[in-house]
Image 1 (cartoon, rainbow, N blue to C red):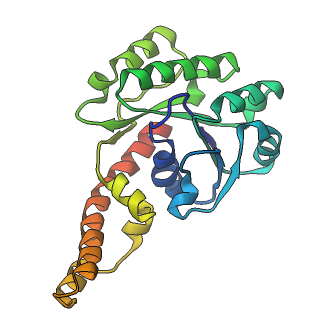
Image 2: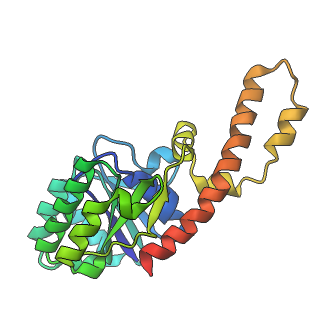
Length: 235
């Protein structure tokens, strides 16, 4: 599977989606960040090949041979990425699925619709354009009404309300520690026990261990939710 994570809008969670949702569930995938200014999955310790949008020729050659790839296209590079995509005949066919994360703000939803329109003009078929609802508070259907209305009107993409990531502080905590949710879930260390075993006067170590214990407790249910999100996005 070769997936591109794209959106004209910034700060919608493309790197969260790449690092915490997709990479752990497509473990053989090469991660390629088309980014020049913002955080990428490399900042969380993943092995990432970094390119710029104008370097599409190199990316195209990679996609021709890759059995699995996740292409994280930063907002600062998406215009170059799409321009280059259109230069190569049927280049969009080398990407199996375009995932568009979106958050509930009006601006993000409008720019997501513009991204869908640009992909449609490039020849991407509706079943390969999939919106992922990020930072959902209660109900994706209510919080992303413009996206669902446009889905019914245009029939240009897939919008499954179960393809959602609920609002959670865990992602900011993971970013602060430069960790992936997969790494935390795989860590079998009993940090709660370690807190109790630590010198009570060692405030710095107690704070570190307490943070990791709290992060484990937060990460495990979110990780299970992401399993369901992945299924909803690709089935």
